[in-house]
Image (tube, rainbow, N blue to C red):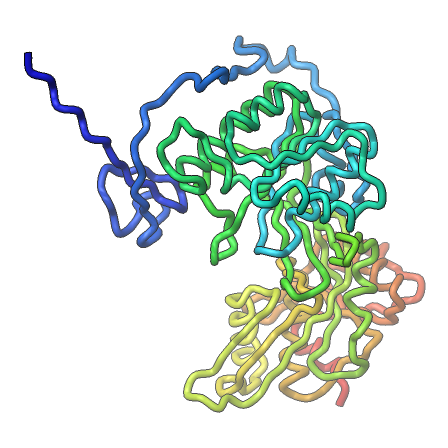
Length: 464
């Protein structure tokens, strides 16, 4: 009897960006539109269980009426890091999954280890899974952060998913940290660690495990050259919270921002300072960002921005110089470059400033990225001040949104912004006129308000 020939192993092609699967290599991904993003992997048949790991199901699979569900405040673990807890919405929700991303060396592992040690000091049982560092290396880093090791903080150096699940089943921790998801692998899959299928399956299994056992899970993820978390986008969809660490690697200050949060606001922001003892909280970022500001310098404007419910002041610096090349350059650090080009066009068309042959540079001091539209007027004034070499008074703050007709539009939460500026000693503030019409009760104690309805009126406040 002739034997059938053994079937050759089937291969598939997965997109590294979105996880799109194809039977052949494609130059452009139909899912995300990325070019040259497909990698070849061995196709592995789907399995219902691996080893002693079965399919995890929710506690209640039967449909229930919405009116019958009793809702209440979620149980949370407060780490003690106020900036971290604020971004999380008040602490880590029991059974939630948090993904932390950021550039190499920005502080992802540091904040995860710091939060885990603080929770361990409170009596919570914490398991730190270090796949990139040995146990001794993690211990050395923990000694710099805390003076005394917590009694219920456990470390394991492991990348095998089955061994990690066995450790979780044996230890029954309340908090688990995975550092990082790109090095964890499932032996049932034929692909190498860090591939699309490995990251997707390992993250999905760990998320189901956390939900079924009520474990608060922190996952650290690598980022690509573009700054997005490496791996398929499904990685961000299956977790509850996605946090990004921002800031220059060689700067002391770090900004923690939530781009997704099922249990809190996505507008909150936490500010940290990287020190030899770990990440230190910056409780008053306004004072830090303005500490080295030059007095009466052209191109320097202070604006009160709002991140979630937290107002703070940042310095906007503009520099304008004649272009030495055939094509002018518009560069922005911490601000949207397209928005800067729009504001420059408004200054040229509506106010007659000759900027067509000028190189324009914009910088938000402190490594903060500003997305608040209330910073438009300060950006426009910073560029105009640098071009005209006319400074704005050092005790004057600016806020307002700018339209295409150079009109200054009203902004939200103006009272909180003005209170923050007044607290730091600013005597005057240029504000949209419509804000004063809508809110007649805006009466700061020691601050003079300068209402404007057009960018031209704001430029008249520059020193002659």
